[in-house]
Image 1: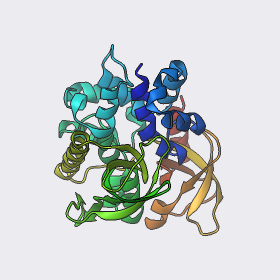
Image 2: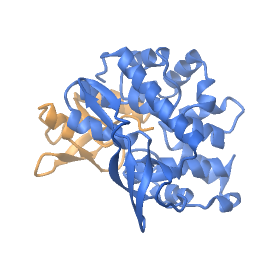
Image 3: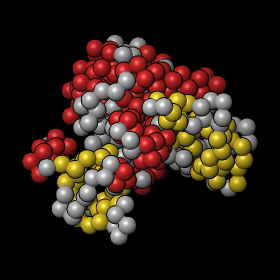
Image 4: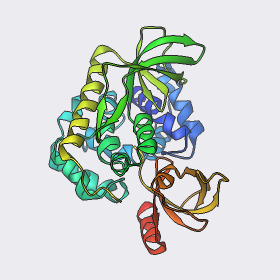
Length: 253
Length: 73
């Protein structure tokens, strides 16, 4: 198991876990892993980390699929493919993705299986963006009119990206490209980044104005180099296009 | 990364915007924002389907128990 990948996984996974939305109830252990400096990776307890990661019942099936039968679900490549998209996520065949997801977690997704399957056939990839936009109930809720509740959930749950405008202690202001609901369609308004207050989660690298970062539930997970930024941006756009292409489906659970 | 959860309402906040859930796990808070927006009444004793801290649907007891078995076999 890659301890570096496990730490990276925890940095992205800890924010919703701390909020009680998903993952194991042992939030303190997830946080401890998330704040482990990369240099201390050799000290990470493999059995404990695997048990924690498996506790993320939504994410773990994707990691297993991306790793393949003999791979490491917590390798850096796999973890990045899940959270950011691209890389290994582009190499998984649609039928393998559908079969794996249906068998592992199909009855616990936020929309009925036929709608999830249609999203995979329309180009969905085994990524967090897919899980939020195509396998969670938020888009359907927005279409049913509950936009005021659904949009913040989408914004918090997706991995967003932005440029740090200012830093004060652990608090930051980050210019984030927001998702908006316009005329019944989700859009990223790239022309108008909005200042958002965020928290530098423990373990995230020291940041300064101008740094580009990934956020999950308004916590900074990681600094994004240009290549990882581009992967996240492209994957989010691709899955918004899948959602738009499919249009309204029977997404009531 | 979150998956569906199911629980039973044990208490409602005074403003009706949130509830406490039991069943299928430890007691936990949940937002009723979606159900409020959709005009769906929620009462103590109701079963709800939850996703990412949001109650998204009120379930009948049979449906809830079946869903609970899927959530926690």
